[in-house]
Image (cartoon, rainbow, N blue to C red; front, top):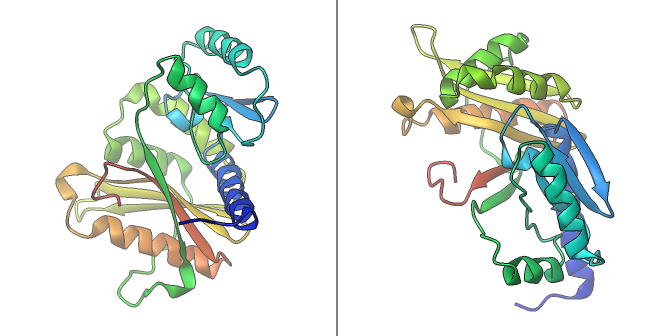
Length: 238
């Protein structure tokens, strides 16, 4: 389907806003700019979004090879593999260069949005977010099955989040955490981060219920649009 240049620019503006909200919602330890490439690095946590080059302007095409070489050195010094996120903001010339150099494409992600006011919340539970960040940290580690070695890194990310953040934990009758999510409020946007359900508790509607709860809470705080990033092969997440 053909689109006008005005529509294309409108779409790119939406992508830029979601990218900026995502950066604030899941902050890297350091962010440097090479032109309009946001170079994000986090030595203490391996998430791709926190350790990647993020192009933010399709027209920024100067000195691609030289800039990649500089970034490769920076990432190597941090003990990270150089990764480039190819959002709609990535210049086609950059993508063509990576293809010509034999770079491998992996881990496709989809960013989805919704108008929160159009969601039917009649069957969702009205939970109050927890205030104890350490309790959420331990619950997230347990639900995701992350090793204890990631505790400090994840704790640093949570403490660095600047927009208002609602932390939600669902527990079993025995008091064991079985699902978690964060609702990050960024003006009228509500981002859902760290969404997970313990493997043995999946396919029971727990994730949908917790996401609904988080969006309902965000709506009461003034959010109008919800967004979430999901791996393309995560059928349950989608």
